[in-house]
Structure formats: structure tokens, C-alpha cells
Image (cartoon, rainbow, N blue to C red; front, side, top):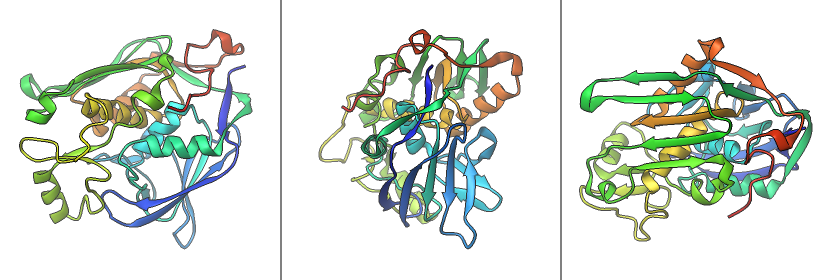
Length: 307
């Protein structure tokens, strides 16, 4: 049986929120089979659990925010991407503020945290959402068009194309395809950092956003070049970060996908719209398990390697 996964022990991290600038503590705890991934706001007078789901997403400006009533957690996508990359099914995430810490701006710190706690197999089958027919969402026309699509594929692969009119971005790869079957998420995707432009950062800070952002947790560009002294981690780091984000956004479905995801100029809003469109078409998917892990698509049965 291809089994569900949780952590062997709890693990902790402390950091600041990218937009809030608030100090925040995370405690990642093992969780029982079929309980899914749950964020718990432990700083509130009465702790509030927020279970991940496409419907729990209530804001997609600059990041993915999930809510339950008035309680919310911002910027969940990098941690969710790490969970997707390592195949974590069940997890409780205690959080002491309303935003997940940005750490180094990528998913690699979360991958390290999860792997350092150890990954435990559980006595329950891992459930996948297998796409049976294409589902697509699209916005805009001509030069303003953007879209995202899920298509049938016996495995999980993602392709993404960006279109930024900026010298530093134009000189890098703007399209990338990544297949989970490679087993190389930690090495090839997880280290890609979020990015922004100085002119946008100034405007965001004036509006109370990006208060925790800087050169130590983001790629920052002026009108011409990357300002980080160490340069880029990958020659196509910008578009790889969009793959990282998409993996996190799509994992808010609550189960891993068996699908080919492709997108052009998509973002958090369009990724959530795609999941909602999928759920609105019950004939477009089925829930499957694998009694024999050898029959599962490549990349899902083996535990992810460290880089």
C-alpha cells in the first residue's frame, strides 16, 4: 500500500512575516491519518483550527490566505509547497501570529524542518485526485491573457511560463517544466526565492505590506538588475519560484494531484480559481489509492532525498 505520511516528531521555527513584519513561531506536529493539514492559531484567546481547502482561501493578493471566521493565516504557499514536495498528508501547524514566517523566501527552510523531524508512514492509504479530463480557467485577451490548466497525466508535472518585461528577468529562463517523478523537488525547485521590484516594495510598504521583506529573504531588482550580492540560485529562479508557489497553492486541495498542470502568467488567484473550477466538475476527477506502491507513478513511493 502507498501510505499516508506525517512527521515522526515535532519541530519548530521562528521568523518574521513577509508582509506583517511580525515575529512568529511555528510548531509542526504529527497528525493522525486522514486528518489532513491544519493550521492552528494558538495566539488567539481561544485557539482556532483552519483546515486547508480551496474554499478556505479568502485572499490571493500577493500570497494565499486561508481563513475560518475572523481567524486567518497569510502566506501559506511556501510551507504548503514543501509539504507537497515531501508528500506530507497529515500535519498540525501551530502558529503564534497571522502570517507564516518568510524565512529565506523559498521552501528550502521548510523542507529542512520537515526532514529534520523525520517522515513517518501511516497505516492508511494515500488518496490522490486523478484528473480525468482537462479543466482550464482563463482571464484577459491578447497581451493581457493569463490561464491555468489541469490535464490528465499519470504522475504529477508542472509547466509554467512567465512574461516580465524586465532586463534581469528577460536574461533568464522564462519557462520551466518540472516532473515530480524526477525526485528532485528539494534540489531543483525548493530553493527558488520570491522576488520583487524596489519600486513595488516602496509602494507596498506605504500600504503596510512587505514590512518583513529584504535582500535576505527575496530577490530584489531595481529597473535594470538584481540587487542581491550573491545573485541567483538558479539561472531560471524567477519561473522556478512560480512553480514552487503553484505547488503550494494546488496542495490546498488537500490531496496530491495526478495531473499535468500548465500555466501562463498565472498566480495565487488563478490557481485557486482552477481548484474551485475542478471541484465544480465532479466528472473531471476521481479519488484513487494504490494497494501496491509499485503501481503508483514514479516519485510518489520513495521518500524525497535531501539535496
